[in-house]
Image (cartoon, rainbow, N blue to C red; front, side, top):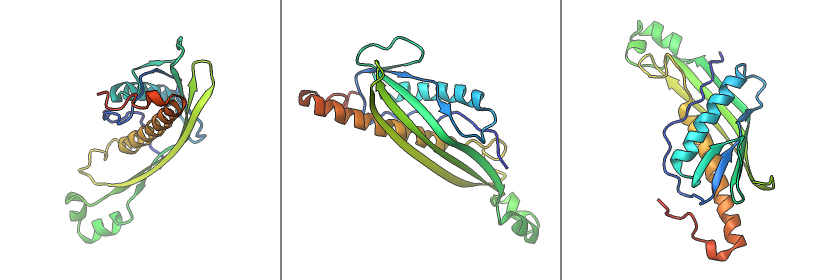
Length: 195
């Protein structure tokens, strides 16, 4: 069974790598044909990623597009090819509940299994549209849910979703720092331990 797709992210951890320039985030694009509420999820996800990038400190400042990027700013474009969240009955649920007279359920045995499957690309460009780097990542997470789990009523997949976007951002910033260092060896320490 497909469940409504969430779009929130966990609170951001401080980025281990950062850059001094500003960033502009384009609306997150979801290309998964199985997603029914695409516009709502794209809008919500764009706001969540925007806040995450700002709170983590990957860049000196972050703004949503459209806007007026300055020279030295980065344009971030995220395309998510696969964005799925599903819930299935745990294979042990029926036999265990039957043979234990439902004690299995009341003592926290898993009832359902939630899964999240994400894949996408983050492209970083200069203010004039020149591509600097492109990184990809994918995440598949599966976890059991009992009647006492917070996800029992509202499945979220928030942990896997956060790890997915964090991995995209970490990879891109590391590659951008490498590009900056190769362009100018005197700027090799930029962004390191700024916070």
